[in-house]
Image 1 (tube, one colour):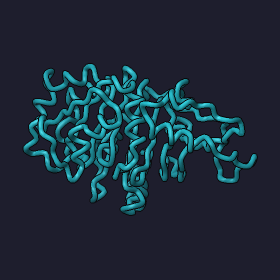
Image 2 (tube, rainbow, N blue to C red):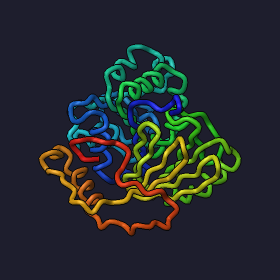
Image 3 (tube, one colour):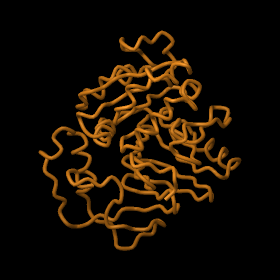
Length: 303
């Protein structure tokens, strides 16, 4: 296994977050309702007068910044962390919340805002330790983009990202804004990078070497220039570069609503995902078939 894969999880959303189940899944991966959640809204473009107390409109994403969307999904402990000062980002006082956080969420806006404030600071090192102790880092739009080792601006100029996904470039709004053309051009000139493209409200979870799609579409363009168009339930092995389409079992799926009562939208999504007619025995899509998902196994939820 590559050295950069951590015990924790990374959840990426392609922007224009609409599905409450994505937030519920993030909270679950962070440890549940009692887990300490920190929101970092620094990608936002309207944060110049942010005072860490009042809700702030970050390009129409007020509910992301003040934490109400997480509290509405059941989280009991939500804090917001923001600065534009690299000196502050390097201070022990600033990263205190991250020492015990189990989940950290990056809201959208401009990835350059996150990079200029935090790259190569103690804040990023503290974020890496969240993964190392089994927590979850999540983000939508530019909050997902910054997770890669590199990101590109609208001019296709490459910048250094936080590197939680090494040799990887994440591109969001991949179809809604025709960014798949940009992604392909970037990767042609940077052939050592793996490209992950997510459309609006698409969601993937990366744990160890496995990427699993929880809402598509998702595009993978790897360093061999192999191209995969993934949908819900598909997986991609970041080590072997093999895409997998899950084969559904014909056996009844046993899941009691009481087991997931604290996450109703997630419970509904699991039922929709599992109560399906099994596919034909032979698959002509070019995917390897596995009888069950390999990622995010949990006895309670049955993943």
